[in-house]
Length: 280
Image (cartoon, rainbow, N blue to C red; front, top):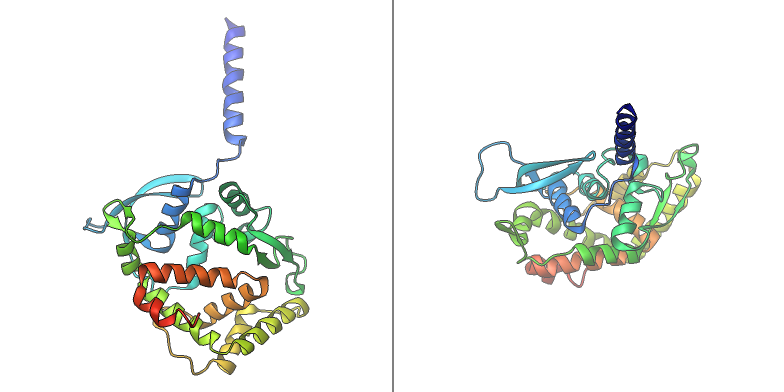
């Protein structure tokens, strides 16, 4: 009898061991899409439900929680929250964990490759300003092909239904103003492409040489010196948009991102698309 009990105990112990040591499965496309919505367009609704309330499964820190949420206008929010939200949708443990975000060994990269079949990062160039830090730090070169594959697989048309809401309605409430302002700022930068290309080259050169390099400070300097007359945005920080453009110009992925933006605007906001299609 004791022998059987010991055998059962051993089997239970082994089962528990493997349950807690096996790597978690990557999220599905639907789970990623839902968590992008939750992290970039929606906000949990703790009050009374209304006609825009949806039920969504939040995946955060390895825990799944069903929450009620509603679309929320993203104006005046930092663009940082948008890309944090995208990363967290693929790696729920990456919340404010800089080292986990984009490194080739990160869970984000592993899940990205599992879902889309390609590495999201081409290479990481170490920077003097980050000397002594983990090798996953540095100037990241995103894979343009990978970004296009991910966009094409995740993208849905405006008429697509998400519970009782269409994606068009979610977009109109949460992102329409934000995208209009961001598009206007991008167009302002691209008015003078030779200047922008020169600044991108200078930005990368400084990043590779300076031990005290701070990208955000440099883009603020560029904003004050070269773009002081750009119209004020109600939704988006200009220097964050500029910084993103400089880095993606350097790694070659800006063209893919602008084409994705055009696709979104053409489907979700034809008025803005027609206004800026030849300017971005």
